[in-house]
Length: 433
Ligand code: GDP
Ligand code: IMO
Ligand code: MG
Image 1 (tube, helix red, strand yellow):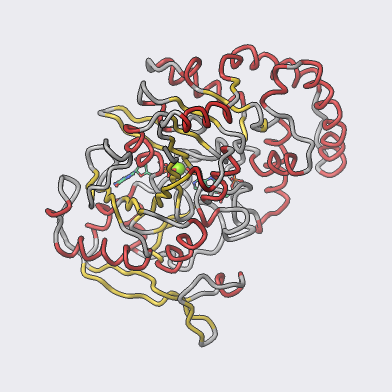
Image 2 (cartoon, rainbow, N blue to C red):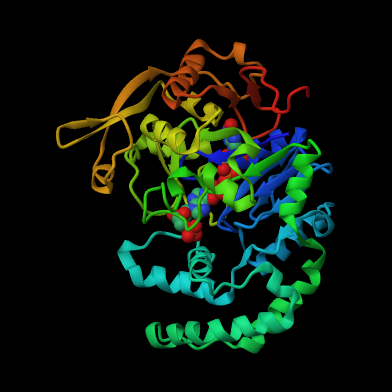
């Protein structure tokens, strides 16, 4: 049975955790394919709130095997904290989570360099999550990274660490005037983590393909979002991996033939954490209300998210670079707050109008949104349980999103809980289920 990709269509925090958790009900494996603990995915089950950073959102169903794929970067210290936290809440991540030996490790010098590079950039900083993500992916591309499998071979781990640490310490001392790091201390710390994570090491390529061959269903859970993609996002204000659907293939070890569904997760408005261009960003009283109603504070860093109206240009672009089969529209309830709603349908720059994502960053940086105005519905929709019962204006808004995103909105989310989801068309994720 083919796999399903769940991908963020904006700048992250679209509600991928909620969507993945909801859809994982009918799946066997949930695979994280890129990113690291820069992600923060919130899942609410009953009265319990789970904030997952590295562990795939499928962990909350006993029948799901959560998998960390080749394309992820792992900070083992953070991973163990997350494992311990979930174990204390009655789950068993130590025996259930399977981790690819090819996933790269975030090392202490990656975290340190992330901080130092940002500090040196001053006003031009990206506003990273400071988790060492960029430096870890840079080392992977430079072929000097350490991988999860290296934790289980002390000799190789030491050889690789000694070789790379010479350069890292030079960088730390000579460029940033910091004290060098000790290979002995890092090795002792990391090999200690290895003891606790041994049961998780897995040939995930084999696990994934054996499952597909047996007719099982797989969800590939993205972190971040399309506009944060290293190649297709708003570079350089991006993360260092490929959240787009193509990244799911390389990050999990699949080919295009193995996937038949790409579900876009998008908010009914837009948010962004960290620096970078954002054409529909709001700074007025509307922004205050949107932030408050949406609870727009980061799951990982607690930073206030920037907010703005829905941007159809970005939705169209995201569909082009991902190939959506469906849209999962989240946080529609937050817009109940407003009397009128705006949707950016194009940009204006130096007398030209752009309907599609502009080819040059300067255009995007200075783009003036061209808005269409829609009426609000002025009533709480968070308790609505059927799409048909939504106010006509809310349905019209969903249809506008659908028209611009050029893909069917199959799910409409009206609150953070599993039950607060309206299925637009009855398209079962797994045929026959
Ligand atoms: P992710 O990173 O894409 O998984 O998203 P986050 O979990 O970082 O941020 C989404 C936030 O919105 C979380 O706090 C969710 O609980 C919450 N959320 C998800 N869907 C909805 C919705 O439809 N309505 C409301 N009000 N909150 C939602
Ligand atoms: P989820 O999976 C929102 C942003 C950071 C910064 C940029 C680069 O929860 O949607 P990094 O630490 O990755 O080098 O930071 O990317 N960023 C996110 N924004 N949601 C995320 O993850 C993010 N992960 C990274 O704020 O602007
Ligand atoms: Mg998040």
